[in-house]
Image (cartoon, rainbow, N blue to C red; front, side, top):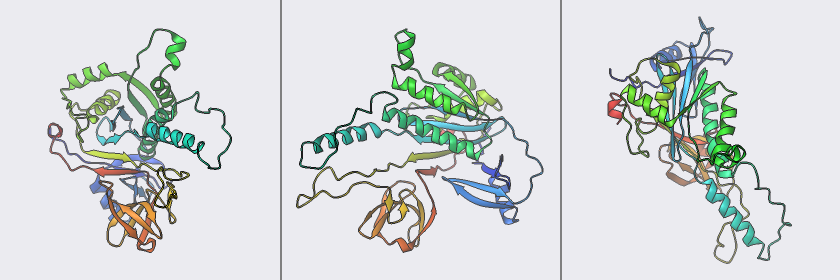
Length: 349
């Protein structure tokens, strides 16, 4: 059986309640007939009906989640169809950013720079910033998917850390353990939560006859989404051959928060400003339409001009753009790119 590799279109009722997704051809027909209004939501094409639907019944839809240290997989699936496959890059830069911030703060105390009195160490206790950012990113994606589809179940491959057999120590010793417990608690508020170990996922995958690629960094369905699809299939069942292996790759944008000054002084010994999230009225990461470069997203600024970046690669296209030449489209916090179609799930390997 060959895969049709169709990315389904999320559908909203006139009162903005979620309905079952539809195929792109039907969505285009509704838009042409004036029965629906189209819009984009973080790289996903959606429609909102202008008429009362004949029925509002929904099926069980599960989200399979395969966490990872560098990349992770998400699959939205019902018993009949696979609606969306996502391969997302993990947030990996927070640990170094916090270390640099600490070094800058300590260095300022040895210079003739006005500084506040040392405060109590507020970093003690709770989740480390790097761990918190990783699990918050996963929850952001799940909240986004829950907003698009009438999701009922979440099934996650449970990753575990080494323990020593003491209950009190094992419950809080690892940031991984504390982080995933927080994530599971928040995810359980959205729908029914199921957990499966890695070895269970492997057995299910082998029973289905699916082969996983060894290259974990490859932008292929068989790298991470093969496990997330297997988990989603276990939750809602259905055909044992995937009907959709097309990938939506997502990369979170890194925003440099406002800092006191740059790490190194410029010519003349002065230290220029560093960081910030606004560029002449545009929030960084926002999607804009430029008269020459088309749809791009906003980066930094230099004097009275802003820079624009490519949606697919993140490469800077120009840095001397006038704000009057840009039309604001929507706020954005990640880059989303849909990979080309493949003829079958086997070719995704």
